[in-house]
Image (cartoon, rainbow, N blue to C red; front, side):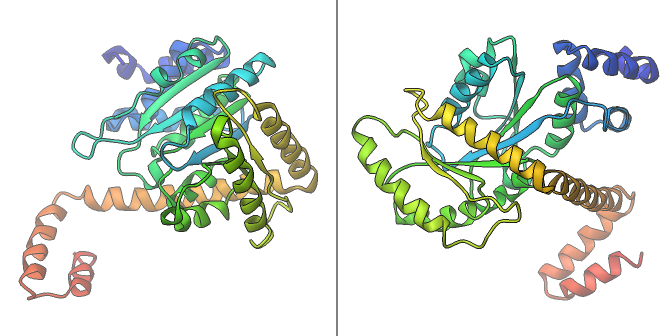
Length: 330
């Protein structure tokens, strides 16, 4: 983003909005880069942008896709995305990569793992480093969803790292939560499975092909039995369990049919809109808490005061609770 882009925000803000409404990929990328920026001037401009496009974008279907590492999420998303674009759908994939703990940079590159889909004119892939945010979801993902909708994308897919119960963060920003599983994952994964399975709107056992097919069929029965033991979900939806092979392109159309059924049912019973409203309120409170934290640490003297108390706490001359109370009374 050049300096001119920052110096004349009013003009360029409208350029961004106009570019998004026309589906211009250059302006789409610029807008996402803007909301990902940590610069104070960029953050102000991005807030104005999000405010202007809120409620004006295309009414998309937001799909979260998760699963344990090695389940084949990227391969599935490429096959799933190509199937959707063949139906004339415009698909955006927001792929959240694991980050380096040292640099916070993206380790994986989903554009290289979804080579065919990345060349599709009806698809857009945006890999982002997860940084330190919960569940491997970049803090700007919600804004990026709105930007993609403003650019006319009908299906927004959020691919997550797949690290466990922290995937609730994704559940809180999508309409449909798809869980990819493997047959014979091992008892060591049962805790992770239980936590995510209770949130899933759909369970698909990937790599159901070749010598693995029989094991996949057995796993399907086990997962289907487990799903019936969970409490009823708020959408009044019976979670389907299916088989698929992203490599052989089997089970992909069937998975989309289930998603369409879910969308129809939840829009009919009111859950779709109610869920969106709840997510917006949750986002509001999350952002409010984040802003309070940012403003607190931004105070000129607070770092020095924190350092003093860290030394007192570590030498057990001051309790943690007392230290916190003192900081808030400065």
